[in-house]
Image (cartoon, rainbow, N blue to C red; front, side, top):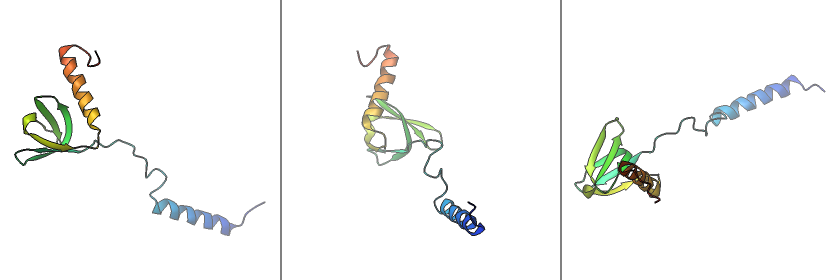
Length: 107
């Protein structure tokens, strides 16, 4: 059974409308994961926007959005906002700290 040209035209127009209004099939799929932006607030009123690279008991290192890395004492840390869970940041810091001393944090 052969369908008429009207049906094919209507199907093509409908498909174009759906794909153009919803951004296509891959619109909700992120092809590259965006880095998580974190905001760090300090007791002196300054803020830093970027990614927490390293934190331990003494210092916090933040990679800013322009690529520079700043290092501040943790004693000046007031609070920070991150979409990452704190345990992820903490465990990463423990692993880095224990690698410096040559032991595992699970020991």
